[in-house]
Image (cartoon, rainbow, N blue to C red; front, side, top):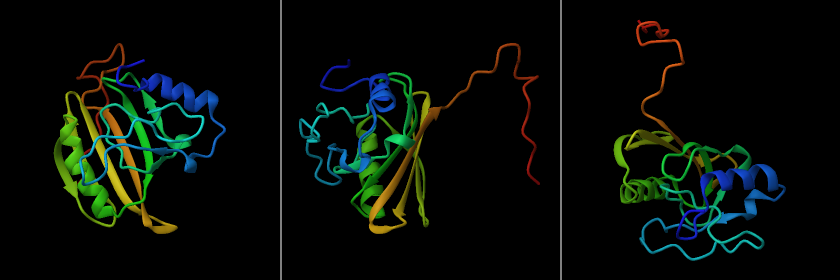
Amino acid sequence: MASHGRITVAALLFFCLFIGGFDTASVAAQPVPPVSGAAPPPSNGAPGIPPDVLTIPQLPVPPNSSFAIDDTVLVGNDDDWTGQVILNAPFSVIQVTQFYRTEMPKMGWAETAIVRARRTSISFVRDQRVATIRISIQKDDNKRTDIDVVVSPIQTKLAPGTSSTTAPMLPRLK
């Protein structure tokens, strides 16, 4: 296990896959609040869940957010995990956008692009990874926001036996 009460991504994945069987709507994360910058509380308060079990290294999570455990997939370790995290937060799109634009740089991520539309998308880079955060109003409750975070490596390795000259190329759009 990692220090400071955090569980490794592998342990979280194990917990999600093999323990399961609980209502994800009742499991809430307790990270840094959107604007205050206060430190996270020591426990997520969910009965039967160890403190900070839903803390994801290098990813800020708005307070009182719910994880969609069935749709969240994480691979790797605390330092270089990749995957998709699906959240639901009780804040507006504007508040969640500001939260990520403020909190991601505190964890070493540099913002590279933002697109504000019906669904806001923000891209960040850190080391050899890119994070894309999509933020939209929840369809059945306009007071809540759906958050989809995808973290992937910037460079991909070629399959054995291929080279950059023999790897398939995508067709150009005309």
